[in-house]
Length: 262
Image 1 (cartoon, rainbow, N blue to C red):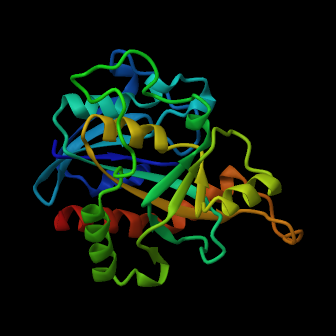
Image 2: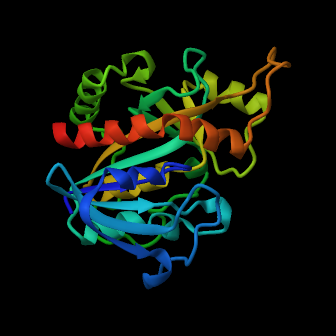
């Protein structure tokens, strides 16, 4: 498959973008894969098909480090795609909005990241390097190709999504599973973060290391609680899934249009 898709929380419906005939393989049937995803909104299966005639593979559910998986397990889908000669990976996630200009339902094309766990040693590239995959010391300043984000922006504009589309933003990766405190949100915003979530960056780093081109899309599902937001409701996973459901059709249409523009 030329294109791979990793579905974030509640975004398993992106598999509906694949045209038939399709082939579905449960994670439990794949040697070396965890049998199940333990988080609601993650289906736990691989779907093969095509989008506008482009062969595609879709992972309906991801593995998180907070579930107890090591980083090598978290990025297994990336290495499967590498072995299948996939060229482009579209990685999606549900994220909290740090940027005060973001609203629930907005979609962000990630252009940079801040990964505190990785800076502290929680990184999928730690250990002996496989030179067949990539270099020992890969750069990440070019992990998000402008060309893919531009194609995504053109797709969003053609679908009249400008009102809730952001062509660039910085995603902050935290380990979870707890949602961030007010002080942590203040820190992340001060450091330049626009969105925050508990996934994605390990896959981005692994994909970039083995020379897969990455497009990362964050769906803003809640606004983080900061000082002065005493009347705001605290984040819940149910709220996240509800926000994803409200934007699911648009996300599916957007992904199809992006692939058509590649």
